[in-house]
Image 1 (cartoon, chains in turn purple, brown):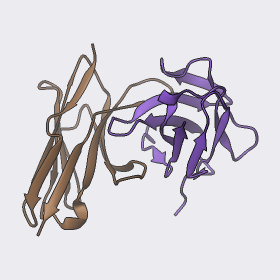
Image 2: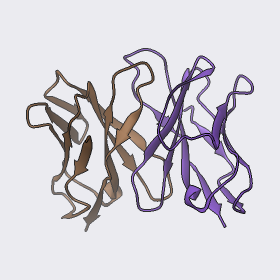
Image 3: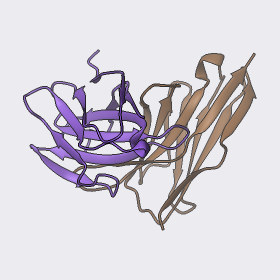
Image 4: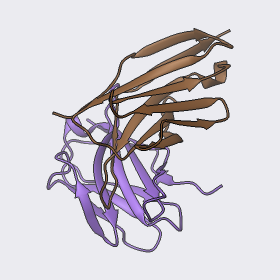
Length: 115
Length: 113
């Protein structure tokens, strides 16, 4: 069964450093998302991406964040200058196009620890 | 302001019983409501979707109801098993092109022998 994959599974970085989190969505999906979950809190939407551009972003997704689909398979989230409060699980998700295909498939997540 | 509340942070039930989880929302007009399962350290896994014009949806031992007047969804697991122990998330789907999910805080279900 096709699945969303994410690398790395765990990333440790120093405050102020740049990190890139990588995702490979399911191959025929067209909508891509990043969510995050701070330990013990709810899953929060960050950004959605369709047709090579951002469709929607939350207040969390400020100028420090960016997303890119550099080739036909990868979808990346970059945090330019990490802060302590960026420590969280980051989940990538994807779904098929069309209003009937609303199920989102989530990856296993990347645990980001900012020291 | 918009709120999604899952009334129980944790629910403990005995194997074989029916678990009922509640999701209430305010200041939303969702077109769809979804339920996901999340195991520790893992991503959410889709379980069921129910549309605003549907009252009830079933899938094997799972049943979801949606009352847009009460602004509430109930999620039932019948004949519960220890393997059903997980956190269950309610998520509202906003209409629009991107269809971002807005999640509740989740209910942690523990099924004991």
